[in-house]
Image 1 (spheres, rainbow, N blue to C red):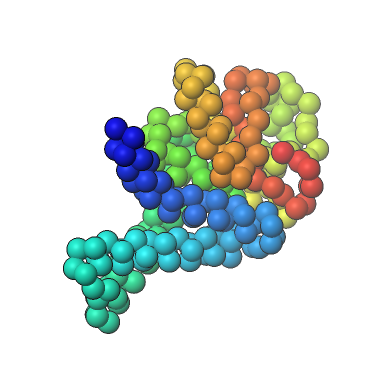
Image 2: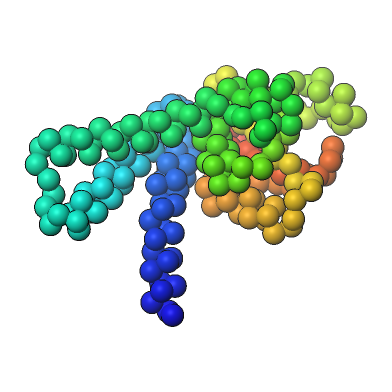
Length: 215
């Protein structure tokens, strides 16, 4: 029984590792090296590409006992690149209407920092019922919600042209599910807060170097 559980854990780890490398890697490059958004993502995509290429090489070797000739290596390289680019590209551009509170939120999706988009899209892949309730704001939006305006809100566009915060719905979802979502974002390196100001929601943010310490 222990061996079965161990093997299952290995399989799960192998399956989730590319997603971890992609998202956590991008957050790491952003936070520690202050790379421009797209450079951080490209760096993480490169690491993910190498991992998937190694996966393919390993399983090919297990099946055939060989690494493969140049033609096989070329096709493997191309397939790994297409998988990584296709997954990242889709997540960076598209948010389904089913995962946005309303159309305005969906239209603001591309204003969200690309690394946050990547983190949200990966979670949507795992939790299709996830609802994004808010992203981009201006000062006047806080007055409309009956709240004092925040000077350093990461919902405002930063100097890089992107919003560094997004809100996720928690109402109507179990505590365990909400905790799992919050844990996911924490593990990926994002800041997380449970807010109840305008209704219970999970506030997720990415470090901004324009306003150090703001979350």
